[in-house]
Image (cartoon, rainbow, N blue to C red):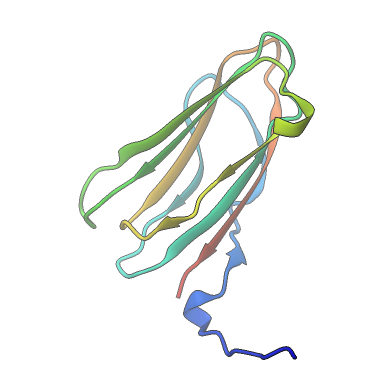
Length: 126
């Protein structure tokens, strides 16, 4: 028997409006940024790297901050090289509980040609 539980609006996960197709650049570009003065959650991010070919490098940098007025600190730095294997073409990030800010940046410092990446981000914000 299924039971329905009411879920507070503060806990509902939604697709963030920053979800989009991004064209890579050699410099760091922000693909997701969110900072709140109250509790929230970055639920997940999915980045499609299926457009990579031999000779490409894509870097993904995930940063957080621990105080509302503080600077961002790198939490994870991921490097992907060459064409990705079929079972590893999608990178998943998260979840990250509120640390007063989450910043996700990407760049393609080595490229045969700059690629596009479909990015989807999900968060729960009051």
